[in-house]
Structure formats: C-alpha cells, structure tokens
Image (cartoon, rainbow, N blue to C red; front, side):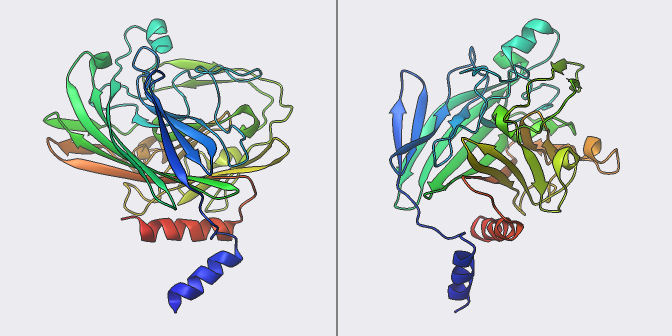
Length: 348
C-alpha cells in the first residue's frame, strides 16, 4: 500500500512517466558508442585517444527535444562559445591531484603552455558490456589512470557503469565509478578541481559583465573574457535554496542549473548519493559553464574548517555515484527532493 501511495504521489508531480527504449550503436572508426533513446540520439561514450582527450567522456549531450546542453569546444566548436579550459569536454570524472599528478587539467594545450605541469592520463581500456531493457540501457567500461602524462606508473584501475534512461521530456544518466588502487599507496590530495562534471552550453552560463582569471593549485591561469550575453539565461539553485554564483563551495544533496534554450526551459540537475564521500558534497559550480561536484575539496571550500585527503592502499577501492537529469521543463524543489530520495533508496 505504501508503494502505491508513493507512486501516486510521484505521479502527481510528474516524476513518474513512461520510459522510452534505449539502444546502443557502436562506431569503431570514430571511437564512440552512440546512445539512442526513443529512437533519438542522446549522447556518445567518446574515447578518441590521448592525442585528442586524455580521458573518455560523454559528448555531446542532448535533451529529449534535441537541444545540445554541452559546450562544443574544443571538439566541435560553435559560434559565440568560450574557448577557455580545453579539458572541459562533455561529462567526465577525474581529479586534480592524485599522487601529485593532475588528471583534471590534463590537456595538451596546457602542457604546451606549462611544460613543468605534472599531468596524468586516463586510458580507456575496454567496453565490457552494453545491454538494454524496456526501461533503460547500461554500458560498462574500464580505464586505467597512469601518471607522468601517461608514460609512468599505473595508479588506479577504473570501472564505470553508465545507466541511461529517458521519457518524452527527460533524459537521465547514472554514473557509478569504482576506483581501485594499483599503486601501493594512492593519495587524493584535498584540492579544488574535481570530480564529476559537465561543461554546459553558453546559453546555460550565468550572465556576467566582467572578465575573470582562474588559477589552479599548480599556478596555471585561465583567462575568461566578457562575451555577449544575448540568450544567456543560466542560474543555479541548490537543495538548500542557495542561488546563482553563491552556490560555489556550498554543500547540497542536489544542484539544479536552469535556463532557456531553443525557446523552452532547460533544467540540468545533478544528485549526490548518501554513500559518497563527504555527503552532502561540496559543489564546484561556476557561472562560466563548469558544473561540478567535488567531494574531496573540503579544505578549499570550507576555508580550512574541513579537510579531506582520501588515501587508498593497494587493492582498496572507492566508489562515486551520481545521477544527472536533463529536463525540457522547469523542475520544482519538491520534485527534485523526491528524485533525490528515490536515487538514494534505489541505488546502494
């Protein structure tokens, strides 16, 4: 009876809807696997190799109505986009400081500008499986984190499960990533840049009338200039009611990015999971289009009041669980709270 009541309650908020079929299309020549939902292209698991990207990503990502919510640069640049942070591509998971090597700012463009920067590479290894049922599709892939720009020691093995689903006006991505230490000791130093992220389209940025300069822990500077704000309508709101640029460094169980694209509302929400480190997590969400959650950057986000230096001994693992909703409509706090509760209960 309780389940029936919950279903009817969710249905009243529009949370329960008919899921569409999911299928996969492998493209070895372009090193990607396309995800099709309801007969429409959604995204691709894209692993072009370290000469193009030093990690595998989901790119591009489209809404149910076909609106591209990710930035195109540097893979498929579009007019009017920012051309900063060339390592921000699609949706990804990595970290700035693992045993002293940077797996976040791991771009060939940055290496050229600062040869002394110690970077790592995340090599795509294999797609273990892809399968579908009437409600969702699952893709499982493995990767290896290697230090010294991919020429050094193997540090971590990665196993990631993606679960894709969608309705007539929503798309959902679950990412479950388990990292297992290969090295005798793996230390994720408490730093700012990490861990699960999306780089969104220009229209979903927060309008601003000033340039800015962002500096990472190794002193790498990226200048973000002022651009034309026409059509730029993005705004954040957290589960705690915090809005706009003020969400950066705050903690929340979910974060929603709202805006208007192609003449209709777009909402992009990321949900944290109670099993994750530091739940509810700190958010590294920026107005210029970086939408990230970083459970390991406590020191910088709390001004030293909280510290996380995650350590794994050889063979030990840590798992990160995130859900992302892309909706062609506005979502209320009540709806997002219910989705957060559902995510927490159905995923262990």
